[in-house]
Image 1 (cartoon, rainbow, N blue to C red):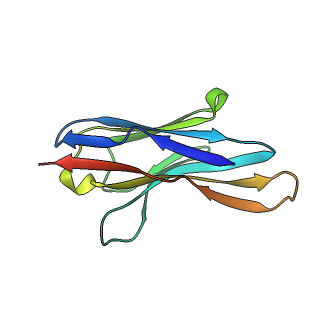
Image 2 (cartoon, rainbow, N blue to C red):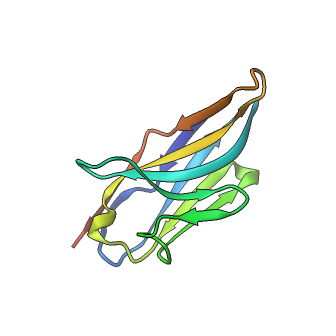
Length: 118
């Protein structure tokens, strides 16, 4: 399983960005996917998660929307009304079962940088 993020960049406060996470899957059953972020000097934190339902961190509720296109094996994060405190490296995450080994695995993308200027 391989996850590749794209869509990060520099945006002014109040602007929008859409992140994408393309999953290359083979013999892997994805149970859940999500977005995490890590700001400089801070721990990685969960931003949003999608499985049968969606959950969001309080800090992004009402501004960010997570979605998933199963036909394309792609997950998205639409980020609106961006704030400087949203500046971070955003990581795509997937949890699921390797069909061959029946083991639960967690997979991470390489991250994409989002910078919000004031």
